Length: 385
Image 1 (tube, rainbow, N blue to C red):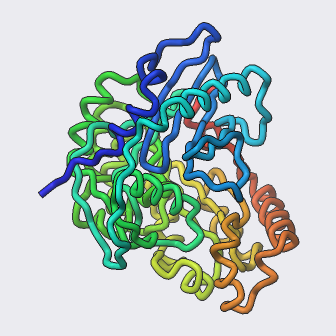
Image 2 (cartoon, one colour):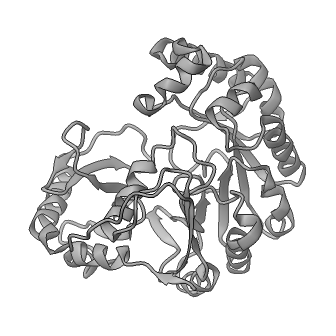
């Protein structure tokens, strides 16, 4: 029997003054474009082409953030403009949001969390929202919440657990739970009828759209069928080779992009750092098949794991239009993996700098676009201009 989750109602309680003005610009010109509650609370604010992403995480005085309230760390960044600092006006907007959160966080219920469990759990849900706007003609869809691949370095693990804590769900290790949105396609069909067509990300930030449960539930496939009918443009990212099972649906789009996360060329490294992920050769084969099918393909090398950079470039460059490269960030969580593998050097800044430079040079020689933004749209030819 499906369940109804409560985290969205908690978000509405906390953010009511902002949600009341959804899509209506304030006197300063800023408007709330979208919100989500599946990895903490998230707000997307926009003004013209400027987009701010504000994330409310569990309060932690040891972690850097923009502002703190009694229960939350507020983190903020400019979407689609990597590394760009906030303007004074944007700082004022963020501080106004922080003030609203401080005034209303006491309205949130204090839910007793059940005893921590180690048993894996699949929760079947009925949801109210699926298509999440994130500004600049972009949306994202999470067909599931949680991921059975369960990479230790996934940065979203703590954020997703925070939402479970707020809702009173038991703590489960990352990789041991998945929420299945049974009615996602039906809800999405209603949403796209009202929304302006754009790019829709389906990527392993909160879930891998092609984890093993997709073979049973086919939520991702159902959502793609809806998007194809509505002329939206999907941008998929996955660690799973089974994305090729949907080549027939993806072939219906005028433009569709598929990326494979391939952080190393060495499957022994993959087995140690990503034991729940598909073998590297299977991912490479999926990349080749997606490329041969005429899709706009890309590769994400993040986090850079121990590898032969020249070999990884040679294996992927002929089959991609764009690449994104980045380091490991969750070192406090993954240091033991490096030590156990005998490569503590590979978690040092020098490794990331040298490996990143070798990869960038290699892809540049092949004329492959290096993308460090949030959407990959321009690099993949999905946007005008």
